[in-house]
Image (cartoon, rainbow, N blue to C red; front, side, top):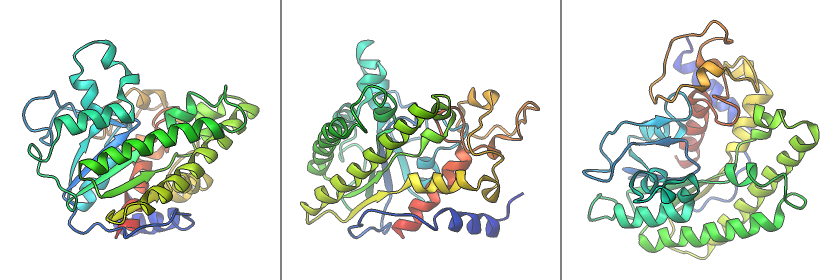
Length: 306
């Protein structure tokens, strides 16, 4: 079993070479609520009635608590995943499609369904995290010219127009997570060398534009008190470069038995066909990180905001 001391040492190693975009007064002081927007790592099961911040049944895509839940627990805050809002409450089947859960749709639903009059959030006690790009790149890289420069410029221009809606609603603390190097997961490895390299370069292009646009956006708002582009890409690169150093059995493997688990609590049952328990895997499936790798993401974000 890994001791707390060993875990902290491994976390420091994973974070050692992070290359962050400029930070504007990043701080965890006074944070009581964490609102997450973006590619769905979890659903909190809220059905539209009662308190959206109360405990509900949930689905997780990390075979355990995702980075966002672990992060909120580490800082003693309440977590709410806005990516579930439109999905859970859309009145028609068409609106319940995954495509309806884009950042704009999530923001519209959040503003309508989680106003400060319903949930006690304000500009000083709430952190807004945005994690987009994985689906953008994965669904587009094969058919885009070059590294997708023009497409991602359009996407991110639209995203920051949506960030501005959150700002108008009262948000003043933002974290923008960049895209993990999923080109090195099985979804990338399985593409073959040529497409895998194109996927890699597309991820790097998206991340570079995200950092630049986040910095430019925050520079226009003098009252934004936290603005951080968090480099999850480097965190996962470090894990995959030296998996055994961080307690993992492989850089890119996953076990299908564990890929079929969607509980938010860790299932400790070990499948003998796997390399070990779920927490020896960086990847829960071909694309999504495991909760064990997400721990480094969460702790890294805590470290950057302290």
